[in-house]
Length: 282
Image 1 (cartoon, one colour):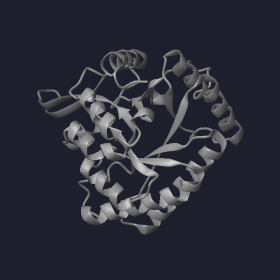
Image 2 (cartoon, one colour):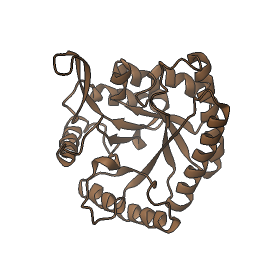
Image 3 (cartoon, rainbow, N blue to C red):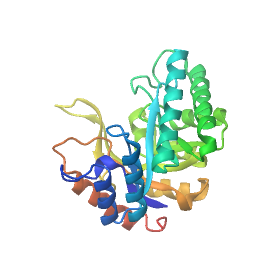
Image 4 (cartoon, rainbow, N blue to C red):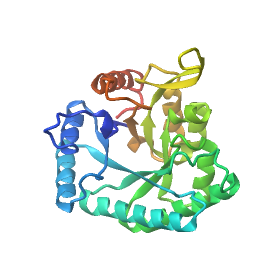
């Protein structure tokens, strides 16, 4: 397994290129994989420069994308599937990226949405995933459906099973399960046979918090600071994932604000992972 981070957790000075600077910083931190996105700059020359920087520093880049794949509106689904395919092919052609996570959107349209009904929606999302998989297969791109604070692991597994495409897999988020009232280990058990990428996350859960919160609470925690059993999850992935040796573990917070110390969060998480997940890391 390869240890990395989402790019938003890696902080660089404002006068440094936001992606290339993070690639350099990831290398300094001893990481080997990083998420990247080109929302702000889709210039093809820039993408090629990013790819060269990643090659130079030994950092694998992974993309993230999403869309209204479960919308009751067929035109919305068609539009977002086509846009996703276009963006993935572009990132592959100019930046050499061969993996992207996929998230259903918007996040407000989650497992509790009334329309379309859950059974029907699972089939609709599976159809969207299959179309994306087919659209990028010739380029050698793999996509991974993420449990993105919206569906439980067994629901995502049903989508993948119905999609039935060899390049449509899972990006397991180890902490997001808590946000849909699911035990993270159970979520991992459902998705392990499909998992090719991981958002490695820890979450501190308070089942019933006192004032001023007054309700259930899930908070970001550095790895080791919450209740997610990431050791058990990695052991499960080592046994059941399709290719555990090349599995990317991307450290990610549940949510951090501008007032939080991102660098301390990342350094603490890296130290914990190297200590407690050493048996799994390359």
